[in-house]
Length: 297
Length: 116
Image (cartoon, rainbow over all chains, first blue to last red; front, side, top):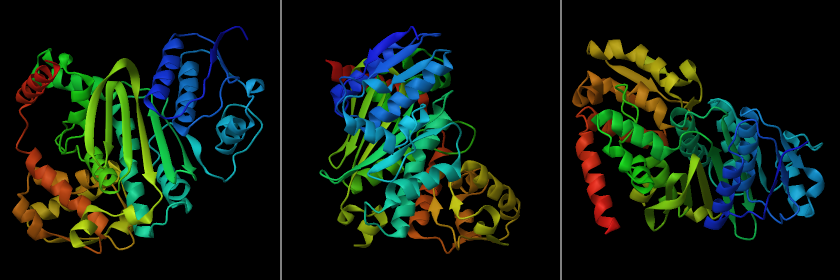
């Protein structure tokens, strides 16, 4: 296949790793472009990279390009084992079925499939046994995480669906879930909404950081069909903070981080057409409580 | 009227379409001043889109004080109850309308200050 060869480096989940992912995205942003991903320099792929690359491959296909993951270039067997285990390789033509391990399966969700998504969150992620939580808490956490998928489908306008992957990291005792879409992005959606509501173009000047802050404010929503909304991200934010987890959001030119120190919003040096929600929970049952439980205690 | 939510939609109160179904069943009776009991026995998972549509939108034409008197919620766990309360609180505020021009002005002003 003649096409652009894109080398995939080692990809973790620090800010520079997300920069690298967006740089890869930028290189394959044309219609009818055939792409071959080369993994010869890749020593590790965190779940955010797996979800992102899977979504990017579907985006290339949607734009009538051909995608090849060059399996022969995998020099690091741990990376190969990991993407076989989480089902990513099998999804893209490699002869391997996923199996249970420390991975939360790579998942492509093309519509808001409530039971499929809730089963994935309830039994494959939080309820897998890595975090010792009660059934009530397991169900409640899955309900909070649902809000991410709901937001992606309700607001992003994604044409190719939503991509997710996760992992439990034994050494750091962390449970990670990454959810990616290649839709219009949260800041762009908010700017368009506010332009429409005010009838003025000034909202276009709002920076990504401010748009994300708006999105995470309780009661603010871009839906105006007479039904109050705008609680989903706020409920999720509250849960993450109370439980000393971490949520990072990259969307267009904005970046948000929510953790036990509160929420902070920044402008990024790049613009990515889409949204990544990256959640990290700690595997320590002492942390898993809800606001009502803190009030009772 | 007593409505078993599990019988109507199953053990997950998650999506807005299911919330809308419940709304359509209970809105008329509540509007007429009848008491409605929603029984959540057997429901395990909750998310805000369901409650926005099932309960939040009732506040469009039923005052909060009447809604709290007429609508009884039974056998819901604390997680679900927390979401219900937040939805009612949010919907009561929402119907006061937002001044989007002021919101944009405030954000741009803040943005300008921080970029100095």
